[in-house]
Image (cartoon, rainbow over the protein chains, first blue to last red):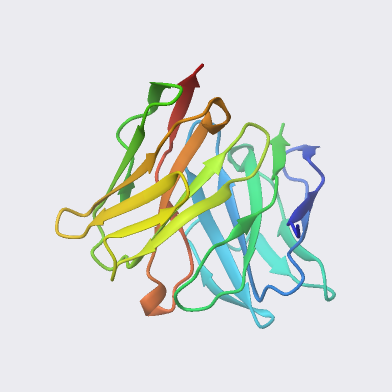
Length: 115
Length: 114
């Protein structure tokens, strides 16, 4: 069964450093997403991406964040200068994106720890 | 700003009985609702969904009910099995408005006791 994969599973970084989180969405999916879950809190939407551009973003997704689809398979989230409060699980998801069926398939997540 | 609320953080049910997980929402623009299941160290897994034009959707042991006037939905699992023990997230979206972001509730941890 096709699945979304994410690397690394755990990333530890120093405050102020740049991190890139990587995702490989399901191959025939057209929409890609990043969500995060701070420990003990709910899963929060960050950004959606379609046709090589951002289609929606939340207030959390400020100038420190960027997304890219550098090739036909990878989808990345970059945090330019990490803060302590960026520590969270980051989930990538993808979907076919049709209007009535919006099942988003999630990857296993990357745990980001900012020290 | 909790647009999707799951007021029960946890629920324990005996194996074989029915599990009922509840979810309330405040945004009347939501028109598509989903339930996800999450095991530790894994991402959320899609379980079942319902469009606002329906009031019930069934898939095997899982049934989702939607009461639009009350802005309430529920997930019924019958019979419950120990493998159903997980955190269940309710999520909603405004697909009709061309938005695909999911708004999640905080989740309910279901424990099915053998």
